[in-house]
Image (cartoon, rainbow, N blue to C red):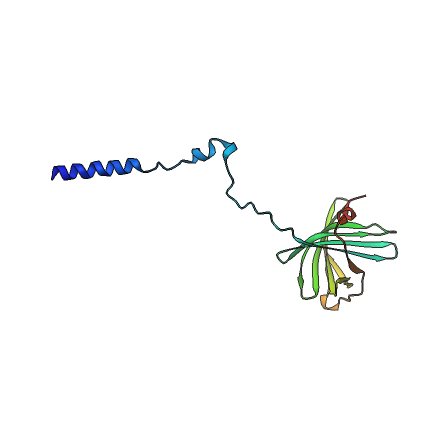
Length: 169
């Protein structure tokens, strides 16, 4: 019986010694030049970007939007000939043919936010006009159901080089 137990113990020790020693964390981090990132190396698709331009007399409106999984993000600039313009970021969403954006600008050290509603009509966007009420630094439509979509018509524009329209000058 002692011979069987002794043979079993030797066999167990021999088998356990043959198993590969698990690699430790230091085996992966000791030489940082050889560390390989196991994350996906696929290049993410660029967000769908659309650009729009609207003009009334000598005033212009530039809008660049990207759809980020249903959230619209981008930039908006009102470039006016006679009065001061504005330049800022937009974030919002589209519900049916209506795009609702929050337009954030900084002027003279003060940050303010305004609601901007646009109606999609074919490929064009028409700016909504309606009474707005300021609540602190935010300005919102008093009654969104009474908005009239008769403001500036924004037409699709080529996005190539469009970013230059958002440079401060």
